[in-house]
Image (cartoon, rainbow, N blue to C red; front, side, top):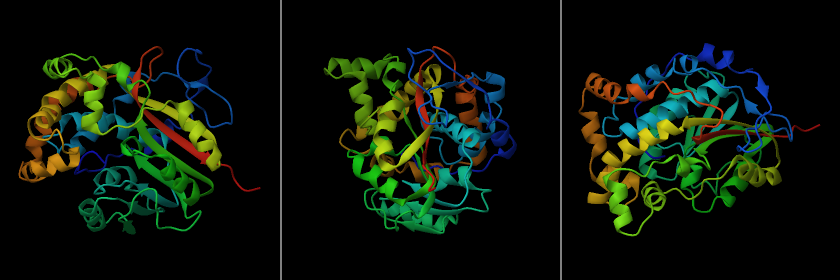
Length: 340
């Protein structure tokens, strides 16, 4: 996970069900496909008005702001990401949280799922220990994603939130996911989309510095974020079909104006810190090196909320899916064929 976040939980049960059966229609062939959960049918959801979509965003921001004052760009990204998951996915049964971090993001997504059993998987020992103490997991494995210490078909759902793009060799991880998801089960994940780079503006002091060094904006941002891939829905589907996944639902989030707002804020905060202190350090290591978690923990929650609300409020009203507009995030649900 990119960041440690201290979260509360919005009341979203009603909205989750009210948007589950939104109508679909055929879309233009020149835009990357979204997929309705039927084999081989490429369709795009109807656009949803910004007034409907923005209803939860201020609430989500209020709950993720404490402890994250120094990560405003990440907070903005997470607001849209969490909203997409809560609106389009329902969870039940035995669930593996792949790359759970310290568990704080999952506390907003899974709390209230009383019928579920949540298992965490995290490669970082410090974060895994925090996740164990969070109280939301029945167990937390400290292990890599290509070696999941669980038996075959152990889970109804494997969930992964902004993790897969950070893994250099993704095929062994996807193979393990295919092994541990039962027949009829689901693999639900969020990743940056194939349109992420094209959403960037490339403006500002840091992009100018990167170009002076002979580096592209895309290369410089990917190096800092440790992003290894930006697959399209078709590429994810081609990778998952051989593993037994047969139906796919895709939702896009993080519209281009929000990506550009994220880019500006990120460059002025984490990007600047990376240039000054950690060009050879991974993001999580740089956060620990600068003791940002300790600084955040001593900031009154009300102050964090007020500052982040002021900084980010104007970016929370964008509609998620608009015809012809690019977007930076993908939420994909891949379902395995049931046994007959």
